[in-house]
Image (cartoon, rainbow, N blue to C red; front, side, top):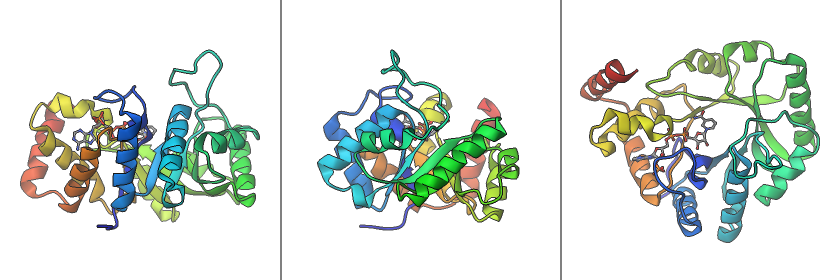
Length: 265
Ligand SMILES: NC(=O)c1ccc[n+]([C@@H]2O[C@H](COP(=O)([O-])OP(=O)(O)OC[C@H]3O[C@@H](n4cnc5c(N)ncnc54)[C@H](OP(=O)(O)O)[C@@H]3O)[C@@H](O)[C@H]2O)c1
């Protein structure tokens, strides 16, 4: 069945760090991506270079690159830190070809510029993104980890048509940014519905029910175009799609969620 879903697959699904479970095997990674593509989840995020390499291998194995909408951020391999999760690096002209080679593709669907406070440098990076779009190497440019001031400072003729930021029931700070982005006709992508899964453990109740409520809280919001979840098991894909189908929270679900927020926020 192929229905329209707001869910996207997070790149942390492909790495060992930043999750509750061990790294998925290559076979499991292929099964996860297949399960997503088969069910209308085409948006796949990659943050660290290790995730780009993993996704490139999976899509080549599946021969399904054309079905995925790949998101890629400016986190790059650094000498001596090949196994680490490093900080973002500002884009330079050579970076696009590195990313394309890692992903084994000739275009990136959404290229993300990680925001920072150096306005001149950010303008330079957006210029590069625009050039790469003109060359057909990038389809769409986005800003990641955005705050309202970043949107206000966007220069005339900027290429940004999408924003990404963590947004979940425990961290609603991005709401204002999302509202502003929507008023600028930008696509809004919410990250981290379970706060890396840590909240699922902290809440300490039935995990299936907790994850369903946290996911429905984000996915049912009109403001939110997509929700990126990392999933190291194919079963999570099916469970999260089912949760999404249940739609907005009932009053009882909302009361339950409020009690967790009161206890843990
Ligand atoms: N958080 C940020 O600041 C940030 C920044 C840039 C990009 N992103 C993107 O956003 C994506 C998602 O964010 P995130 O990794 O912070 O965390 P998340 O998606 O909020 O949580 C992921 C965790 O939830 C668990 N999980 C997923 N579905 C589940 C289910 N149905 N039942 C039980 N557990 C479930 C996963 O467990 P397993 O370990 O078993 O899979 C994983 O540990 C990332 O992969 C990345 O692409 C996030």
